Length: 160
Image (cartoon, rainbow, N blue to C red; front, side):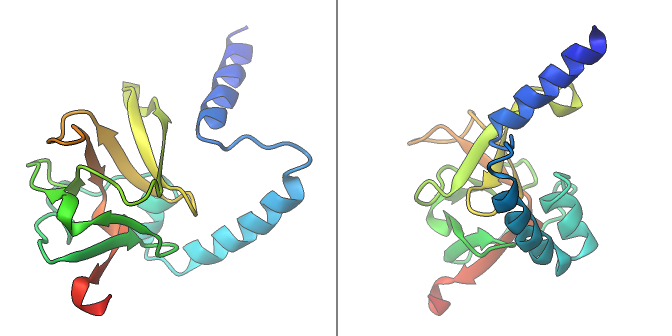
């Protein structure tokens, strides 16, 4: 019975994140998997651990925690625009924090790992793990997108 409940719980968790698969989707998913694998193949071990395996970098260790240049923070995997420097703020958490995302490019799903209930944030285009979002941010949204630096690629406003 416990095993049955475990499998039901796992399938529910995967469905919440949009990761459930049907036979119809399997060919399309195989193509996406091959593309995803090639995207992850070029990453450092730390980027892979965080973006693919949903890890977390140590607080205050990331290159973008205390980074205040103007520009756009993009997904390190697919280079999709995720956050504007205009929405970045100092949260004191040790990770880059933003109060808003760009154009609904970040997907949220429930994360119950580590004995907590949190909202995981993923790149909507490629599914890369970015970090978590919390409801303790500043106005106007009240949100704090807490992001791993290695999940981000910064493009300076001068290069846009």
